[in-house]
Image 1 (cartoon, rainbow, N blue to C red):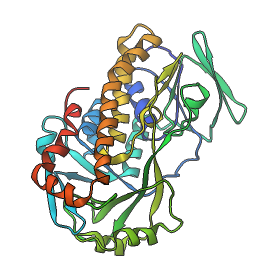
Image 2 (image 1 turned 60 degrees about the vertical axis):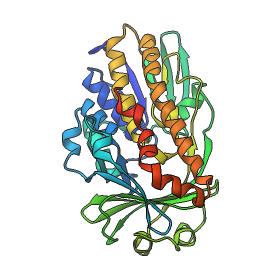
Image 3 (image 1 turned 90 degrees about the horizontal axis):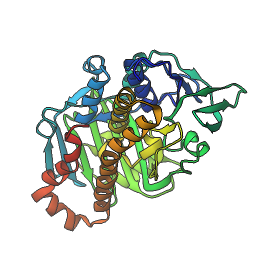
Length: 368
């Protein structure tokens, strides 16, 4: 169907939606892209992209624009709460032949994808209704406009309106973590992806280049604190390693709760969900964006190869489900270790942690 005049609507202009729009444009389609939020509402935070994300960016022909951005990450270091070593993962070896791991500001990746998608996003367009037709989808927006499409793609995140309106599922369920994010400048010198593991809590620092650090911390829970800065100091004030210097420099903290989405199916009629709208998990494996980028590549390939929209959606879902299920299951596996007392967990990680953590990505090193 490449080059076909299919009328395609992508709902959501975040990372997933822009990646899908880029992939579709490369395949010869010209999708409409809508976003309910106004432009330029981007938070100042960072991203860590594993090697399979780099491969997907090559598939989108965007590896060139991303290459000068951020910092290549070659090693993951796991420390205990005191800052003493537990284990390491050699990322160059793990992702050999797949792609480099990279950390960069979220805004930078967004701009690359926005340019790659053609830059045309209709902002302030909130979906009001989705009606499945025999050979299409009728969509109306809260501003009174609407249209009919051959394919509607919900890329609108874990709390997807398209998912609910199309009858594909309800709200996400809490994954049981409170997360803290931010970018620190004038912090300590950290060369590697560095995580400190405590009891039911963890603290991650990743260099973004140019003296910036992406900081991420989490704890078990389902209620965000009113004062996230005070809570960070309460939780991690006794940690060692780079944490004291990071806490001293970290003043702008974004706090939120993690969601998980698990669905019996991702498409109904000619409505399809991608990215977090279909398969959100806790960010433990840093695979959320990688999965969204892979979704985009595989969806475009499926639409090019299939003889019709319905066949393409079936082919797409059959290819993507095993990988996203793997990410979900490995995420749950790793999260369960949070409940293991450090006195039991830490000796195991010192002996076999590198192999254990590397194994979590085994399926993802393979082809899409």
